[in-house]
Image (tube, rainbow, N blue to C red; front, side, top):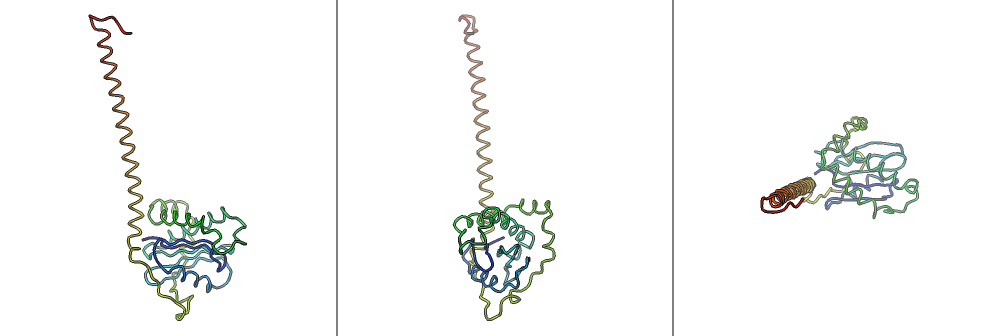
Length: 219
């Protein structure tokens, strides 16, 4: 399934979010933002059922995602790092004065695209390994969500069962695009080959006709 939900916030103020499936992860994510201690930069993960909320806070900007526990830690935190860089690059200091969901219309599309990429493209993990930028993730402990939320405040995490198809859908889309590209190139090559064959046949026929014993030369 990979990454199913993502949020960008300033403190507890949500600026942009996207969910790839029907879920109440948004409500739980905002509870986490309200309860997370201190203002220091941090990397932390909280588990609930078979899903994990990964959080990265840097310079007052928090990026959070919910992923299937099978996604591990490296890929979700690589996703959070990428989202943080894109968000800061795009909006700069406007981040510190933006209204709630002020960047949602534009940046939710970026979240959607990057969720698909990090959930389905094997290059996402391969590139991350080559860069070697996520060594700090090794030190991130995955704690139960009860660590940050009181039991009375904790909501049951609801995820649409169709989320089980999310990863397969991402992979299918990727494979479909590759298949269409392969077929297109094959058709182009066949068309070029056919044109060359026809040109050769025309040349041979004209050469034969024009240089025949009973006809004057055409050349």
